[in-house]
Amino acid sequence: GIQTGRNKTDGAIYESELFNQIKKINPSLTDHAITQGIEELMNSPNNQTAFNHLRNGLKITIQGENKQVKFIDFDNPQQNKFSYFPYLRIRTKQNNYLEPDLILFINYLPVVILEFKDPFRAGRN
Image (cartoon, rainbow, N blue to C red; front, top):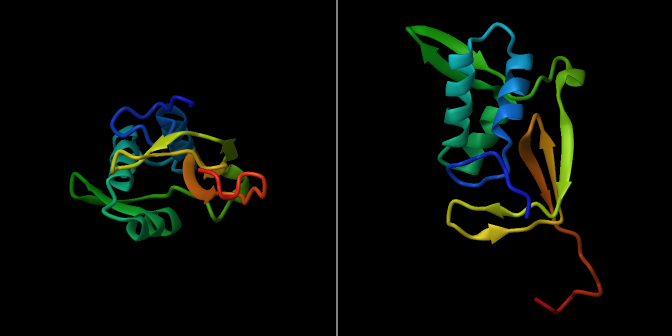
């Protein structure tokens, strides 16, 4: 499988590219704010919370100031980076491995996981 840049959980995340991309769509935020936002997103308690952060941004407080970290730029879609990887091996929080047929990324964050039906592989594991 493909090695990812994420140490803690081997998730499908490329940390340096992710950081640079989130900084690009949040030019007014400090590096510390970006890092805190990404960490909070990665530590979302469930998929619904993570989805809400992706969709609406994430509110963080730094030195008493409220900041909003956007992960997808809906106002300027051309600012976003769209990419895909076939057969990327990922480790889940439960330490299982998945190798979906295709993962779609926005700003280096996995947003869609696709499995295609293969009539020739049906019934075989």
